[in-house]
Length: 72
Length: 250
Image 1: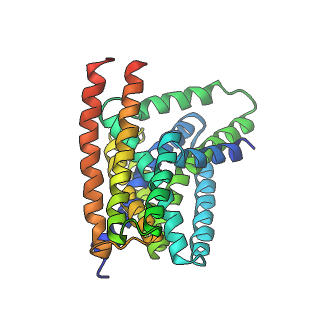
Image 2 (image 1 turned 45 degrees about the vertical axis):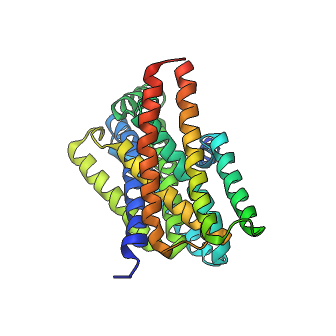
Image 3 (image 1 turned 120 degrees about the vertical axis):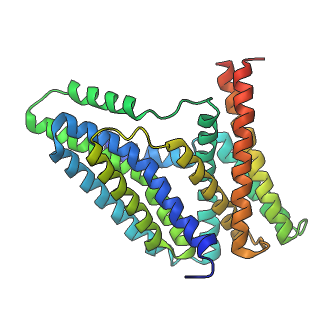
């Protein structure tokens, strides 16, 4: 049973290593999909927006962690 | 050679190969600790059993995904690749910046060896415990490899190619590891993790985009600028994070 629990824990960690990073990525995808579905942006702009949002989310996660470890 | 070999096939196989190197090196450290403490028999038995389970996961999950409509599959796989790839990239950037310590194989080997030595019981029980330790290490490290193989393989029907890339990495690490007979601490794990994180993030953005209806300029070719964007962002962020960390608390 320990192995099964460890496998489930590992699977969770694979996608939710940093909870805020995970939720921010999901929010970015949902946001871009909504803008595209509502016709606010075109199919090509949506792609650029998605890539830019992911880089911004990554930057926030890295700098937040660096600041947190700096304070620790 | 298919027309999109260099933009899709090659990065997918390379991602599976490089990610496997990272994970197998970590698993090999534990397997070696098991072999050094209790002999090669439990080490090999545990490794073989875990590889069989991982192979089964890929064999069942890979073909099963072909029954899911391509847009839904691309969206789900794309989002999972984004979560996984950006998680790896974040960690690799923080390690490259010196904010997080690098993974130390020598230390991991010493810890596992000490843990195995601390166990007590009949010789047969100790062999079982050692075998289970090897099984768990290979299975847990291999889960990430299995995910990458299934994810990059399912999106473009490259399951066998990605599996071969992963198997080649397993063979390479095991042969080199068996020859040198010590933890492979010289492997630039973080650089590999950085590269794989970049590739998987690019694949993730591309497939998520395809899944929600994005029209990429240049189709598959856009993977190259996407990878370049994540690489550049990663390098810049590592510099900024290092500078911020070295400055100390404000």
